Length: 452
Ligand SMILES: [Zn+2]
Image 1: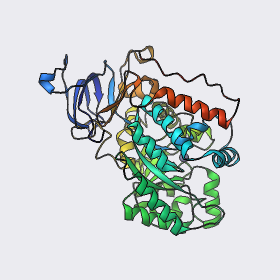
Image 2: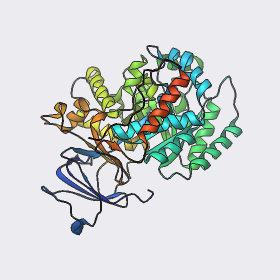
Image 3: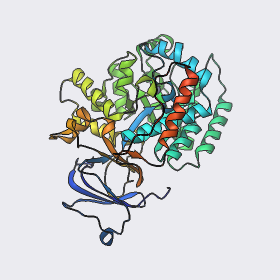
Image 4: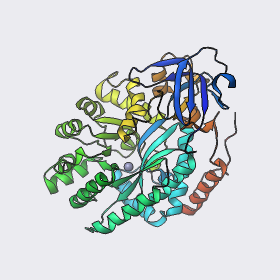
């Protein structure tokens, strides 16, 4: 697995997402040792061993070939709490239901089982790299490694009731880094939860720790107005301004949400080219606001898309997220200001930039890692197809993903997941559902999807 596979992907239209947004019809992509060796157009290509010396070929069957999708913010283990708390505003959802449930149920087993369920969902819907933050995060990392996906796994830091134990916290982080160091497709991060439950002193310590260990910081920022109002009341500045005083925005930081911003906040985040995960479905479901995505991009911030956890979305389908993101920005800024092509860039190369992977993946180019997906277009909602970007954003969903490949390894082929045991993951999730809310499950007996 480490070296990655050798294969040829052919018979599709490749949206390269390179600098020139090149689209290659009848694409032939040759993959060696997990990396793209070449990509070119060759109508009528018939794979033969004599020409390419590759034992494996993947027929895109006329579909759209594009870089694997990048989920810039999630909490994958929360899939086991999907749908358990609905129709509530953010504070009640989190404080009255989710936090108490997590206190009762979250364990290494819960985290692994929820994460592997989500990895299955991501493979099925075309995500190949995600940025996570949760508890017992080394068990998310273990699931990532088992699934064949890539991820940044963030060790969450929350301080409750004024506790501050910096030395113990840094020791815990050292242990976490040690535990995940064996996983070649996992990058660790430190994840201060948010401004309202982490002190300034701890932010400073984490900033220093991340810089020393050359790892990113992942946090929630200005998700709701009362978070901003409380910061203004206590510190006299917004959360963005508060952290700016620490020179925090010059560090390698990935922020989730950035919804409730002032014009000054947008200036600061733009000037520092801060990396932002835009998670509109979660924002709308929990009743916050429309993030100012276009003004942030215009000022220089880098914006990708995220789903947030599956308990506030309620899925990890990035193609659905993209459609929603495009429509609400059209409403906020006017149609065409954020184009469908720009949204597909957010899903791929811009997402890779947000996570600091754009030198390795995010576009289909020779030398990059062979992380790619094929979206099927042999169905009623795909024809006729005049504009592939608009199709992906406004018409396709994750259920259209036919093949998912990471590092040249096939994780799903012709809608059939390999490597992971789909039936046992689903029946395990069902068992968790019965434990968490006995008698309240509508799930059928777990059953693997049939191949076409
Ligand atoms: Zn979140």
